[in-house]
Length: 224
Image 1 (cartoon, rainbow, N blue to C red):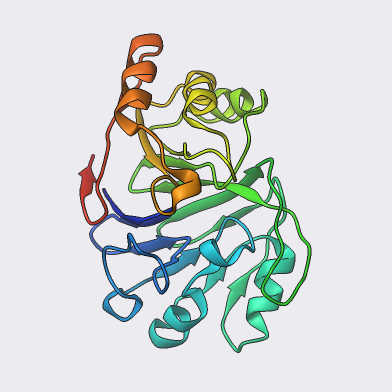
Image 2 (cartoon, rainbow, N blue to C red; image 1 turned 30 degrees about the vertical axis):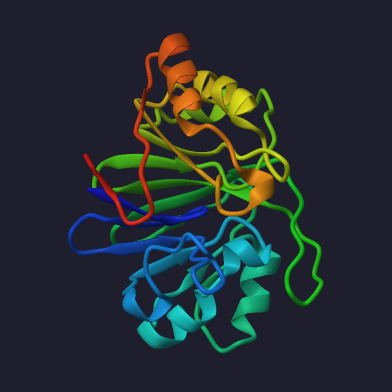
């Protein structure tokens, strides 16, 4: 199983056959490792409706035929563009040939490009026998611990940039609550308001928890 960091909060997760894209914000992303038309996809997952997370989902879906999975209101709105979609709500699980995706809470806001106000989520993704928790955009909240207690997490993709999400200090606490074997930071250094010291985050997490922090530059891949 490989996780490629595409920049901002965008990731490509593959087991060698299946290619899952998460929050594919590439066009307009100054840190994007690839362009949208370079990517293939089996499925596309979106944490919430903000444009820096929905990104190029519709264009990629139309080109590849990959269905989009997101919160009910987001998925149905994107479905109006003529793409296939899955529309779970918090606590709901979608089962695919390659694994599962469960929507879990995230404390944030979410409004689509069309002005639809909806609820954000985190994503609990099981693929290739590995469980990946993409926190989405979120503030720190104690119930993160329930996610890790209910389902042991192999890899946590954690926002650390501050301003729009929790900062690196709160993210280090979040890492402790979740208890993932591996932590990969994201949603930082894309724009000036979310610039932060990622190596300080790594140091804090590894000093206070049993998690290993893997810092990926856009385009780099983590293999498990």
